[in-house]
Each structure stands twice: as structure tokens, then as C-alpha cells.
Length: 640
Ligand SMILES: Nc1ncnc2c1ncn2[C@@H]1O[C@H](COP(=O)(O)OP(=O)(O)OP(=O)(O)O)[C@@H](O)[C@H]1O
Image 1 (spheres, rainbow, N blue to C red):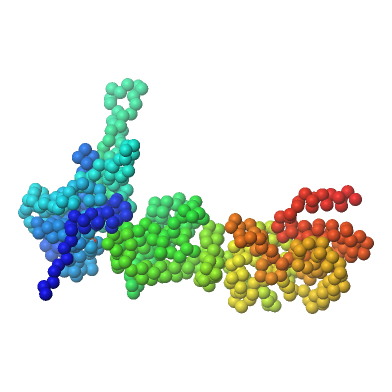
Image 2 (cartoon, rainbow, N blue to C red):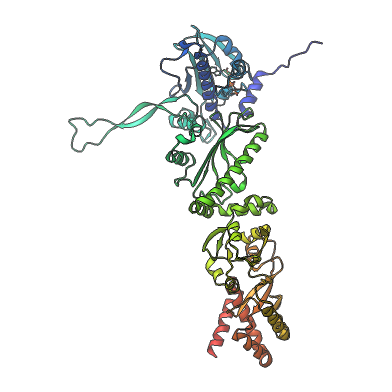
């Protein structure tokens, strides 16, 4: 049986095309300029074997907007189209002359963009009528293709002086609702500044000049007989301007790019007035896609960085044409602060060029970018500490959040980038640095968590650690202790909070003495515990206090600081309680007083216990439940 060809209702097909492929109608310009660039590429390719085809005044793409006639013309002096080509390329949807050209000529040398044979029809998103006047290279007769979209097209002989193509779009009128508000605006596509902006956005790196007459306001020359109170007069002058920068900076050789050029590009492209801390510019030949990337580490977080509005992502270019402004899949969340772009001519794009067809390519690129970013950050941490500290100040939280997210799935990737404040060095250090500086005999990595360094510096528990000349990491961000707990150890040494559990820093004798004293005074401690009414798990003699009278420590997996952080969360899961221990320094005179009161005045002992507990809370940086009562109790004591 003879095979039948599918028939398509071309009107419907065109309508579908126009309305469902693209999300932004402004991309019609990108598509037409890409076609013009392809056409010039083809002419250039042919001119290599036929010198007569080299245009006298060079190649160019020109935009002309006529607001009165409501037309926008995109002209090129490229290869042009014969009558047949107009018929085949513009009359058959999904026929790509460009793809055929690439296949026929098997050339790697061109950057031909077209492949699907649909881009041209994007014109109908903004135009009610499209006229294409084209004269193919080497031909004497020009032809005019014209269509209003749905009702088909006509082709007739026409007039054109030089080889190339003019695409004349009659821009649709603005669509208004009953109230006269603009619902669909089209006028903008006749405004020179808007058009120039679109060129810069999507087609900045098309390698031929895209020109347009741009209006400029100029002061008129002052007349000789100008009166004294002469006010300068202005007129609008049109000057020819090239709108695109043509050579993508990232395609230049690294050694030919100055620091200023990198920085200027960053500032203008990513709207940051501070110069970046680092530029990572590289070219990669991958199995799935070769690409060039130019990444920047900003010096400061954008104002919305820590809000839901911030969108991470890199610009994605295919052969110099912008495909996506913020391709989120190229960056993991924890490197979401990185700005920059990726350019590849190997990407398999989907038909609208708004997405890639295979995210396999994207994944491969993302993995290699992540490695690059990490290794560059580590380099910075090692060789350029000042800038790394700035980076850490701006984005350290993101890295810590990344290490904590998903139950620590990425913690090992990020471990070496982490920095915490060192009590000894009085600056931020990495975990590796702490570990390497550990003196012989130190068995654990000490840390203290709290709201600020000054407070932590004064923690009674720190004195014992300092006495041994051991460093302490001060964890001052809410997330810090959670991250440290997930990491659990660094090069086989466990993390140990100086306010939790047994620090193992006192000698066996000291420990024994503390235990004995605790046992001997068990009844007193039980009474104290009871009077605190469940607020502490135990009261005991401390083996970690040196000169201070009292402190709070914790047992179990939840520390006092974690309790504070979790309970302060707006969507916290109810109230959590750390298992607190009130530790008393038996060498402090207050201990004797307590023992005395236990025998003489147990009510007073209970009052003092409450006072000591509140003091311990204050030292730990935790607000007390009833500050007025606390203050009154102290005043009562003072008055006695
Ligand atoms: N300005 C032009 N000069 C010469 N030929 C052109 C021009 N514009 C379009 N063409 C021809 O028309 C064909 C169809 O264009 P169209 O934009 O629809 O698709 P494409 O560029 O091939 O592919 P894509 O949909 O990927 O953009 C092109 O392949 C090209 O052969």
C-alpha cells in the first residue's frame, strides 16, 4: 500500500507555533538577527572561493524603526534568497536552509545558529504583516515574500539594489482593554532604545555589527546675535551606532584580557559596583559538550541574596546568542552567589532555544563548574586570605547551609571551605588549620557556641581549656553548631563543646576530688536540683571551672545553644529542652556558703540556688525568665 503523507493544517500549525513555542515575544528580534547573521556567515563562506562576493563596505545587520508607518526593518547583506529559497525556507514550516547549508558544507568554521526552521515565524508574534525583500548573491532579480500570517503568503518579483535581505515587519497595534489600559504592548518594538536594549540582551555577541540610527539630543550652536538671557536650544540628531559588542570577552585569549576589562564586563553585565574578588575564566573540552565559562566571585552579597526573591544561575549562550539569562541548573545552591556565563556551541537546544533538550550536557557542565569553583575558592583561602575572608563574610552562611542541608549530603565537598573564629589566633581559620596546629596531647577539637565572640571569650568553661593552651573555635552563627555536629570530626579528632559532657581535661586526682565532693554533698545538691523544679538535670561539683563560681553545661545531643536556636525559630517544632547541669566550683567561697546554708537555712539555700542558676544562664548568653525578680533578689542581698 502506498504510504500517505501527513497533512497539516498550516494555519493552525502557524498559530500553534506563534503562540506556544516562545514565552517572550521580544525574542522575535533575536531570531531575525540570528537569521541575518547566518545569512552573512553563508555569504562569507562563499566569498572564500569567490572574491566578488565580498561586500564593499563590510558586512552589517541594520535595524530601522519607522514609528509613523509602524514598521521595523531588519536588513542584512548576507547571502539572500532566490525565489525557490523563499518558497522552500519561508513557505515550509520547520524547513531549515541553515541546517542544510551546514550539512552540505560540513564546515566547522561558521557559527551558524539556525537548525529548526521555525525562528522566522516568531515575527508573527509582534507583526500583523511580514514582507521579505531578498536578492540572492549572484542573481539579478529580487523577490518579495509577503504574508499576514494565517492566510498564507505571496511571492512576487521586486526591486532591491544589493544582495541580501530586508525583513519588514508591520508592528501590531497595542491591545487595550475596555478601560483603555494597554494589555498587550507592541509599540515598544518601534522604540530605538528598547530595540537597542534587546540587541544587547540577546545578540550582543553576534559577530557582525548590528547598526541603527540612534537619536541624541544635541545643543544647537549659539546664534551670534543671541540675547544676554539666551537659553541653549537642543535638537535631536541621529547618529549611526553599532549596538552589539561583537567579540565576546570570554572568547579572547586569557592573556590578552586585562583585569580592568574583566572587572568592567562584570560591573556592566551583573550590575555590581564592587569589583569581584575573583574571576574564573576557562575553556573545557568535555565528552558531552565543550564550553567556555567566565565566572565571578562577587565581593558582596546582592541586597536580595538572603531572600526568597534571589534567583541563582549563570547566563547560558549558544554560539554567542543568549539562551537563558539565569540557568539555575548550572550551579548548586551553595554556590548560588557565583555570577557569570557559560558559552557552548555543542548544546542541543529545544526548538524555542529557551531550554536544552538533554540535561545530560547541562549536568556534565555543572559538575565540572562546581569543581572549578571549589578549587578556586580553596586557592583563594590559601594564597589570598584577605579576599577569602571577605568572601566568607559575604557568603560563608551559604556554604555552611549547604553543608547542613539534606542531612549533610554535601558536607564533605564543603568541609575544607568552612571557617570558624579561632580564640587563639583571633581570626577565622579552617578546620584543617585548627587540626594542624593542635599540640601534642590534645585529644579533641574544642568549640563554644554562642551569640558573639566577646561573650564566648568570657565563658567560665573556657578557662580550663585555655590553661592547657588549647585553641577553641567560637561558633557565633545559629547554624554553626549544627554543622559541626554533622561533621562530627576532623582528621580523626572529634569535636567537643566546652560546655557539654566531660572535657577530660582535669587530672584524675582533680576528677576524683570533684566526684567525692559531689557524693559527699549529694543531699544538698538534690535539694538544689529539686528547688530548680525540673530546669536542670543535675547539680554537681565542677571539674572544669577554674576561678568562676558557677556554669551551665549540658549532657546528651542537644546543647544549650542549640536549645536557644531551635526555640527561637519562628516555625519551631514546639519547645525543646537541653539536659542542663548546674556546675558549682567547689574551690570558690560561695560553695562553703551553700554548705553552711544547707545546715542552717534551707530556704535561703533555695533562693541562692535560683540566683546561681540565673547567673549561669546570663553567663551563657541566655535570657532569664524573670529579670525583675532576679534584680530584686540581688538588691535584697545588697540591703542586708
Ligand atoms: N535573512 C535571511 N537571509 C537568508 N536566508 C534566510 C534569512 N532568514 C531566514 N532565511 C532562511 O530561512 C530558513 C528558515 O528560517 P527560520 O528562522 O525559520 O529557521 P532557522 O533559522 O533555519 O532555524 P531556527 O528555527 O533554529 O532558527 C533559514 O534556515 C534560512 O535558510
